[in-house]
Each structure stands twice: as structure tokens, then as C-alpha cells.
Length: 63
Image 1 (cartoon, helix red, strand yellow):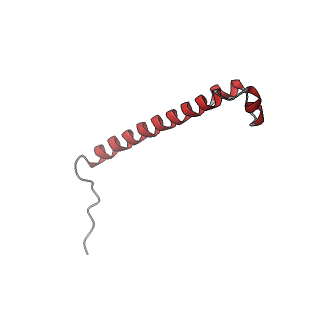
Image 2: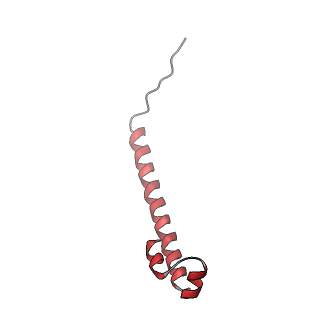
Image 3: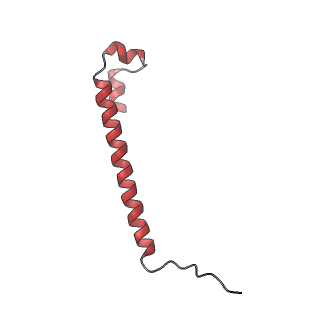
């Protein structure tokens, strides 16, 4: 009976952490950009239109 080698190759953990960090940064940037675009679109609506969807001008800044 043989046992599996459960040790990661040298540097594999570091590479994984770097990739995870880069993925996290990309996700954060995408979320920020989407929120920015949403705020821009909502800012173009009239107060009556915002009221129709249950928002106020103050709510836009919270998005």
C-alpha cells in the first residue's frame, strides 16, 4: 500500500495566494464600477421616477 504525497510543490501555496489576491482585487474593481454605473443612471432620473421605484436622491449615495 502506498500513501499519496500530500505536500504541495514548493511555491504552489504562494502562487495560489497571489492568484486569490488578484481575483479579489478584480472582483472589487468590477463591483465598484457596477455601483458607479448604477449611481450614474439613477442620478439621471427625475425625483418622480425615483419615487416610483422607492428611492430618494439620498439613497443614491448609499448604493
